[in-house]
Length: 76
Image (cartoon, rainbow, N blue to C red; front, side):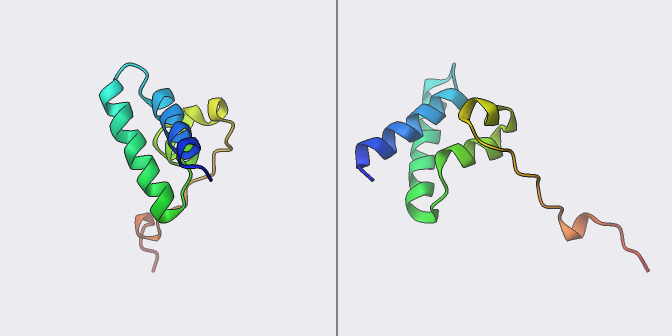
């Protein structure tokens, strides 16, 4: 995918997350770009993890969180 398209997609999602704080949007956009390049996680998925309420706006389905096995009470 073209570098410019990747960066613009990350910045679009960052602006949706941080509407009033441009500095935080820039930082999160760089984080999303690096995460996408290294781990392959798309910026929309990262944003939904951070703010599940944005899922509808970004056109993503919210996946239920996995329950941590440590959080269950011990059953004899």
